[in-house]
Amino acid sequence: MDNQNSLKIVEVEKALSEDEQKDYRLKLAGLAKVAGVISICLESEELYLEYDPYKCSIEFIQAELEKIGFPTKKKKKQNFFQKSITRLAQENQESYSNKKLECCNLNK
Figure (cartoon, helix red, strand yellow):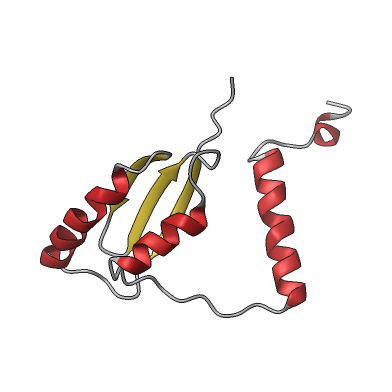
């Protein structure tokens, strides 16, 4: 059975001090208990979230981060073309991961 968990890296608006990291770790403890959230790792400039998308949506997680006041880096709005390219890249990453395509192994 394949691992269906997803990893989301959330960039922090500014580097967090050690005291800020401690405070946010306490606030994130509640999120870690949500069904579907596998693990949370907070670094000074990034938050790593591993979750099961079948049990918990990334939109829910982002809403919870907003509720606790977590300082996420705001993304620029993308136009239709940029959204399409980003979505295509994500789908390709999910489908093919880092494996070579079968056609790349022909004649070898």
